[in-house]
Structures are given as C-alpha cells and as structure tokens.
Image 1 (cartoon, helix red, strand yellow):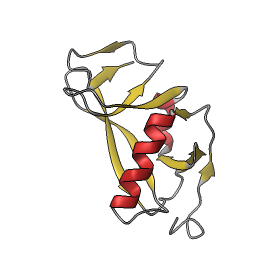
Image 2 (cartoon, one colour):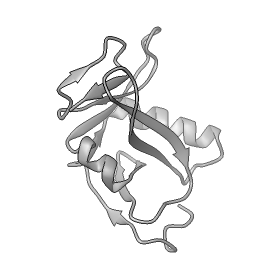
Image 3 (cartoon, one colour):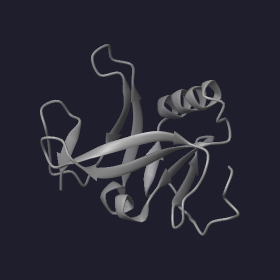
Image 4 (cartoon, helix red, strand yellow):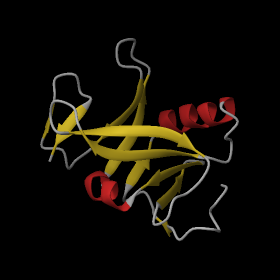
Length: 122
C-alpha cells in the first residue's frame, strides 16, 4: 500500500471490524478491477442520513496520518480514529440482494437504524 511508510498509522485487528468471506471476495474483486490491487476499503462514519450518522466507503491506495489499518481475510480496511469509535466490534458483510446490493456494516453500537438501513444512531 502506497504511503504506508510515509505516515504514522496503527495496525488494528478484527476486534475493530471483522470481514466476512463474501465481503473479502467482493472487495478483492473491486480492488483488482480498479487497478488498486494493493489498496484498501476506507470506511468512515460521517454525519448525515435520517438517523444522524452514515457510512462512507471508498477504495484507496494511500494511508492518512493516524489511520488504523486492519488486514483480514486477505484484504485491507482503513479507518480513521474517530470512525473507529463508532465501528468497534462491527462486521463488514456483502449483500448480493437485488434491492440492497453492496457492503453492509453490522454494527453492535448502533441503537437504531432508519428504515432504508443506510444510516444509524448510537
């Protein structure tokens, strides 16, 4: 991963976020297709949505200062320290459901979700 030696980052583990085999398989495919084979999925928790917080995901090939890097199931996740507070103990899954296709975060810290499932509150 580019930039890993140039910035100060922390190595995390699956206590922060586990990755299912389905999510790992899809993430690996997406990274290959986007020419970011050595990259990662960045997960951030940002304000927004009908419940107050929502997930923002992006494929990246660089780390930022103070990022937390989780390597599991043959893929990498990158989380900023603030988002890590909301994500601790989560599971990243992938849904191939026709109406809700994509990555799904199963978050034990969420006290409620909106009806569309795209935002949450703690």
